[in-house]
Image (cartoon, rainbow, N blue to C red):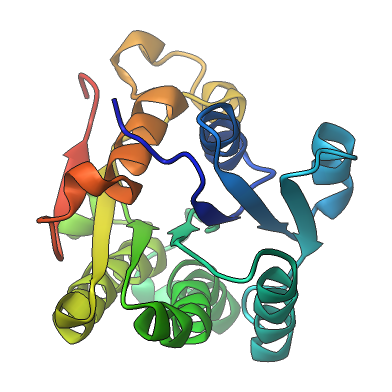
Length: 234
């Protein structure tokens, strides 16, 4: 079993379907948690007065907000052992030649810039510690072009390459950086959007969270720059 007891873990997008499941798993295994999301009220309703958990409203595409949250985490816990970048977004749309600039910017910001800003804020601290883990979430669809979701595919492809670059830059510093590639995640929102699908073939948030915990544990110490498929049966 993946041992993460005593680690200080940041989870972004912690109020979402995957983020909330991963956060609960880390908590149950004894980790200290810094939970970041724009929807901080939901986090407070779930975690209020839990000693080993802090909830921070953070705009992940604003450097000043990211840096403020990281500073508060250091003040509270004194260190950061793992950064789990779950926050992101998805958007269908028209063909590229009809796509709005706003859609392009939103996808790149939510999925790639958020990882860049969080990593930039946290990795110097991990280098000082000479240890740490960073986990990113890309997508199965990032591996191949497709129609109608180009900004999403491109932004998630950027996450894969950002992960690989971070791994190459930091593997000699005691820091592991790896990426997970889920297929369709079995969430209430996805079931609502695709009511005729076979939900049993989708991957559960719990299955993805198991892999996240592995990547944060010592058992993954030899894994650097990997993009791990977590597809369920789809």
